[in-house]
Structure formats: structure tokens, C-alpha cells
Image 1 (cartoon, rainbow, N blue to C red):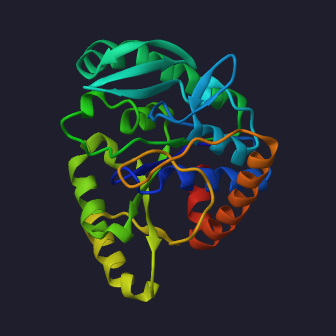
Image 2: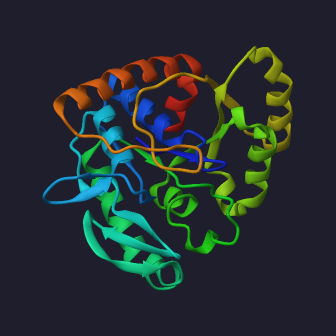
Length: 279
């Protein structure tokens, strides 16, 4: 099966939760599924005595019912302030790096090698790998250093879903603008749009669906409603994330919430279209 990748028009668009939902949906269909995010910036990790990765990928692994391991998130950055981050490579602390050095000296060498090596292992061991992007693929000032979005999608030969948070407004412009700004060689990878966090009557959106398909030749394959979830979120401008204890009780609670999420997402997306993307 071809890998599937979820990218967003911005941070906070809902990539992490959509990947978790898709992991559970395909796990329930009987596939061996694993999540993957090449590079994640977060102060909230999943730590064991042997390794630490981002908790978003740990939660996605719970959704996929696969082992939590460093290959799911080979690069994690913990912001330290003043453009410095603690870099974790393959689950281990690597070094403190300034953003300039990270981009110019690390990303295209050690970073890309670690990401592609981990991805290759997962593709070999699982039926389906569901990748998560980071931020937006249209950050044109950073595109040549971006190993979390289109470069990794191309290396994985993944079909890309582009998701946008409609609750913030401007989703149609964000989707069309993103497609305009990504490099031409990557445009063919994007197979469908998803609108997330919608409140109201979906019929109101349909003229917009038709218009953006005319403009981009890409269909909207689903609109996910705004919903309440008790799943730990990552830290961002819009979220005050909290640490959690990885107790059996908390993991069981997360597992039940993922079941609820997956059911809603499954009913909100054109799953037949998604299945065609990965065959």
C-alpha cells in the first residue's frame, strides 16, 4: 500500500488528531498501521528510560495499536528560547542547536538521513504508514530545509491530504494559496482537501467546494465537525498543553477517546476515495 500523509495549511489545523483517527480506522480494517512524523517541535514528549519521542506520535501509535518506538518520530526539537532547541535524534538527546545551525548543518545531512531511514523501516514492517506533516508546506522561506512535508512525501511516494481549520476562517483561501505556493513538482502529490472544525450547515460550503475544485482540480473529500475531545494536545499558540502521566488508566482513557474520534472522522470523510489513494 502507498503511504498516506496529512499536511496542514497551518499549525493547529488538526493534523495530529486526523492522523490518530486514520490510524485507528485502518487498524480496525485489519491493517498493520504505523504513524510517522520526521520532525516534531514540542516540549511534551513520551519518555522511557531508553528513548523519548513526541507524545503526538505516541498517541497515534496507541491509535494504530503498534509499538511506540523512536522510528515513529526520528527528530524531536524542544524549544529553549532565543532560537535554540534541544535536538533529539532517534529518540536520544543529540545536542543544543541554534536554528541557523540546525537548518544549515543538520537538516539536509543527519536529519534527512535519519528521517528516510526510519521511514524505510516502517514501510518494510507495516502495511500502511500514515505520515504527519509539520506546520505548512507553503513556508516559502524554509522550503529547501523542510524535511517534514513535501520532501518526505515525495520520498515516501505518499498521497497527501491537505487539512485546514475552517473555524479560524479563510480556509478556502488557505487551501488555494497553499497549492499556489508549493513547488510544481509536489502539486501532484496532493489528492484531497479536508476541512476541519466546522460548525453549521454543510450545504453552505458546497459552492466553495465546487470553486476550489475548479481552481485546483483537487476535491474536498470531507468536512469534520467541531467536537469535544479529551485527547492531550500539543503545545501551540492556541493550546495550553499539559503534561500527562502514561498510566494504564490514562492510556485506556485516550484509547476510548480515539475510538469516538475515529467514528466521527470515518463518517465525515469519503473513505472510498482515501482507500483509492493508497492502492
